[in-house]
Image (cartoon, rainbow, N blue to C red; front, side, top):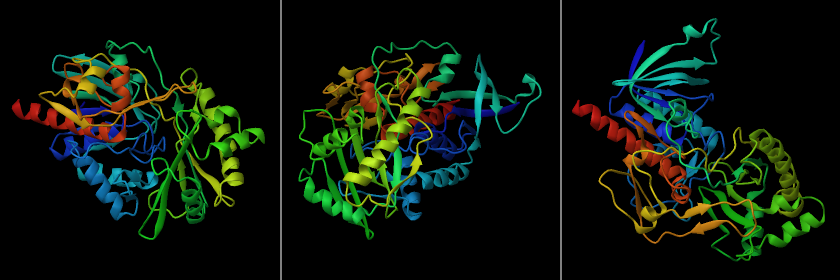
Amino acid sequence: MKKYDVVIAGGGTAGCACAYIAGKFGLKVLLVEQNSFLGGSITSSLVIPAMKTADNAINTEFFDTLYSKLERAGGAITYCDGNKGWFNPELVKIVLDEMMQEANVEVLFESCIDKVEEKLSGYNATIRNNNIVYSHQELLPLIETKYLVDGTGDAKICQKLNCEKLENEKFQPSSLRFIMSGVDVKTFSDWLIEFDKDRNVTTSCEIDGKTYLSTACTWDSGAKWALRPLFELAVEDGVLKNEDTNYFQIFSVAGTADSIAFNAPRLLDSTEDRSKAYINGRAAILRLSVFCKKYLPGFKDAHISSIANSLGVRVSTRIKGKYVYTAEDLRSGKTFKNPVVVSNYPIDIHSDKKDNSVLEKVFQQYQLPVESLMARDNLFVIGRSISAEFEAQAALRIIPSCFSMGEGLARYLAEKLSDL
């Protein structure tokens, strides 16, 4: 039986941050990941760029290190709005491997925790590794850990242990992101900046000789979207379906001269059947690519170069932990003894209905306490499944906050172990 200080299920944004910082503190760490690479939402779901958060955020060593290494590799930029979360998802895979090796983190790819048993001083678990064919169930490797961390995104480990869940009374639709390459970004940018004068929506800048941009358009009527007439024309022409126009947001990809990443399509039926969501999402991606080639200057010779391996899921199972973080905690800026996150990102709720989405600004910084990561003694949950009300989770689900909560938990565990 192999023994660890910390075992983390899920090598996504929060899981990687937790593993790296715990390893840097000298803890013996095992990171178990179901894919063949790390990065979760950034790499598997193509969620780029990371959203900008508070300037005085805490627990940022992991984020800063990742950015520095990516920048040296040509895979990260700081955009003109000061957001340094513009990453190249393929290079993130490589850099995260390097970081885990530097921190002496043991990583198991294509693996999952098969069974888990609570002990007096920690947990025992068996690991199913899909790289190896086992002839008998009992041959699954057995591990022991003082602390077990659920970073699966769907609280899979907590559910195996029958932890109490919060009511899923509300949902947000998922997205299936993609990237188009072969774009004449300079031509597109010049046209776009002239076409849309609203700098709260459309921006562009040049960094290291490359043009970077961002723009958006939704079907909601609360804003005057410059691109809206083009989407309406595409629906009339039969190029798009009306539901394809519900959400459209695009960004350049760090370190590339010809690639555009799409935060689209937003899938209106994705909360019920993920298999159906993938099929419908890929069909919508093809339609959106045709739309871009036909109506947007600079896309004539572009092509779909990447489709996300997994849905961009905004909310899923949430665990009822030691402290349930509330929307009132967030809005009031309540402070805590052991915060793991400091942020000012708004309450961001996507809806499957027109004019029903919410982007509620927060007028002060707020803190997330470590107690909202405590599912049970020695069992913790990080990422989108934390112990938080629906509205509060909708502000805390962004990548920088997941980085911070993973790192903050690692620091908390390192301190606990040093006291033993």
